Length: 422
Image (cartoon, rainbow, N blue to C red):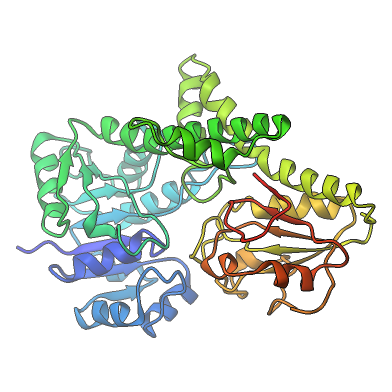
């Protein structure tokens, strides 16, 4: 019997995976967001991870996008790709994972496999998700049903490293199931798979991928703060140091998004639960979380130096997504810059041609529809995100946007003209 796959969660991770599987298997895409499902059934993906052609291709392959549990009850493999955010106390919020497990538990049958892709701390799948599946289904784990874990590695906006082109970690709750899970992914992942010895190992591998990157970026941010005080160009230092073959060439900047700014808290939470305080990981988080305030403070200090009035000042922020050339605003730290500047009673205009203004993440952001060239309006300009179009702005354009002498704060070091860069 051919496997029938249900993808639970149709966001940045679930939709491309559903599309990939639909080329070889019957697939049902399930999401609780009715608007999202209607949008996909009309052939459009607001995340822009799939083109209109690819969405239509998945529909032509027979995929069904739905909000009804009845439509997934005859599936035998369930793949969960729901968000795993943190709460206001920087602790894991497993609510979406728990609710999706409860939903699957209502339709779970003997012999079914539930595979989780959401990033979690080591042990979460078997300690949290399995108990919900057992409770709702009345079935016994590793006897009646089985689990796997294959962490997502989606990089929003990246059209080169797409889901089938990245090597996939796989795992299963028994040796036999691990092999089945691995074979399932091998059938669509052209880059190949790595079969981990246990679900916990696979969970841990995923969470340290982004924790390592967070720590490395924190080092760059700390160095940038030191070099700024020394009057040394950080980017020039990195270029010089990067000539050594084993130097890790990262740049300072804001750390937001659904992974790097979140995953370390999952690992540190579990570490503290077992009695270990991860000082390096938490220290890196503190440094990276402080960059937004640093940028806002630098903006204000530059204005003060030029005797520009701060209260009531007009400031233009270019870019608000968490990374360049994609519409993803999840956990963006640019909003923290905006809040910091608003506390100084500054008037903020935000321009980002990538963002869908109807998205809920866009709420309360003071967007403008176009850059008001020749306006001479702004006391300062913050180039916050390295979108391609912002790299094209000339010194003359910045001057024509500026009220008096230009102040251009370049967060990513991409502007043709700047008065300060991180």
